Figure 1 (cartoon, rainbow, N blue to C red):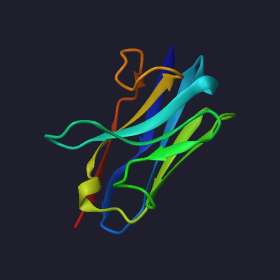
Figure 2: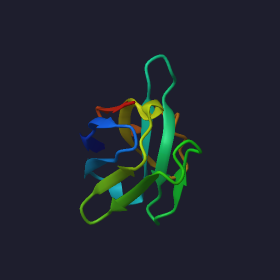
Figure 3: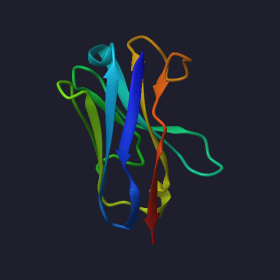
Figure 4: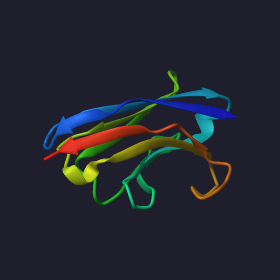
Length: 121
């Protein structure tokens, strides 16, 4: 089992920056793929960024060049640094973890409780 606890988030003006952190505890963190998702009101949850244990990353087109995901395996943390924030980035952001070979749709995916990010115009 993996437990995920997010920190960060809050209110920021458009064009500003914000950082999110996700602390993971339990087993299997070192082999998990970590990701950040977000869900805005009335919209489906979407993958924002992911990072594999080897460090390879993926980003949604909407955040490429503005968001950076990183992980510290020794500290069991995953970070999401968000720059040039836009009002459309407003959402609840969730940390997630999965094992290799599993889809993000799998019921075996672990989720954090979510943290609100609000970007004012």
